[in-house]
Amino acid sequence: MNKVIDLRSDTVTKPTPEMREAMARAEVGDDVYGEDPTVNRLEALGAEMTGKEAAVFVPTGTMGNQVSIMAWTQRGDEIIVESNAHIFMFEAGGPAVLSGVQIRTVPGFRGAMDPEDVEAAIRPKDLHCPRTSLICLENTHNRSGGCVIPLDNMKAIYELAKQHGINVHLDGARVFNAATALGVDVKQITRYADSVQFCLSKGLCAPVGSLVAGPKEFVDRARKARKILGGGMRQAGVLAAAGIVALEKMTKRLGEDHEKARKLAQGLAAIPGLEIDMDTVQTNMVMVGTKGAGIDAAEFAALMKRHGVLFNWSTRYKVRMVTHNDVGFDDIDEAIRRVKEALGA
Image (tube, rainbow, N blue to C red; front, top):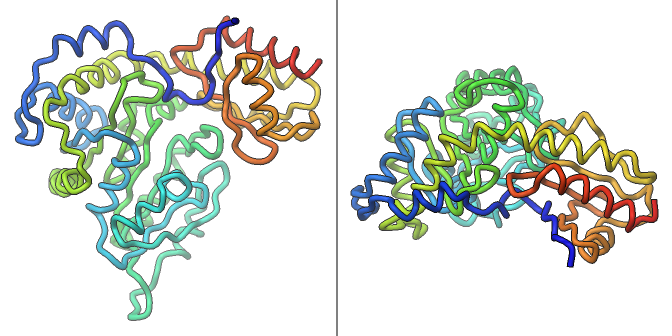
């Protein structure tokens, strides 16, 4: 059988040989007691790289976002998110279940909310209204196909939040992709958020884990929330060792994934019936419209699975393809060839 080309997500990446070696020789201790030196090193590195005071290692990005909401809010509060934000769409109602807060959504353009719309969504100080206690941003924006939120937009919303005494949390699951696309140090993005969650297990290839970074008092609360959710991981240095390699090495190669996505998008756009907005191909994701090809997204995904190309469908007529370290430029060429063959193009 031909090689399977897996474009479902950058979460499917395998640990690199360097990561596996680091994991095998990692010095460990009990992290719940704060005694795992490798975890401590990872947390310090993550805090330094994002310009924050402290950080805490958590098993998943979803947990990272949820412990952040738990740490910043009180029950009965309201948080503002973009209408297609991961926190709202794909975290199983966590803010309501875990923090007892409700979500107010604001529509965005490619994930970026208009600051005027955000300000209009902030609740007045009124007995009848919940307190707006947190604004959540997402960069890159998953549902928009990996689009990058412009820095001036983040800055405007952050300054607006400060005027109203509201904290800002950044779901930065792929924030290093955003930094790569913008050509800036990641600190230039995270400066416009009080806290940030970023994943090690997506394009950075670590097998497990995310970091939550912010002020020390916030991180202490987030660490307590992690314990409540069962996220204390004991000898987690075995995992943290891979995370250190991810931050030190894998953040520097993300531009290759962006090049692969551009190559994929250009190849697919040349196939009659497939529709791609090239302006949205900014990082490592490609959103492909299928309506013009006379096939819905689920059928297209099933068809290509039979041809050894895996990806997920997003809406009725749109699929998402994600490039990553485990897919080479030759694999991109082969994926394009197989799509042409399957569609009879």
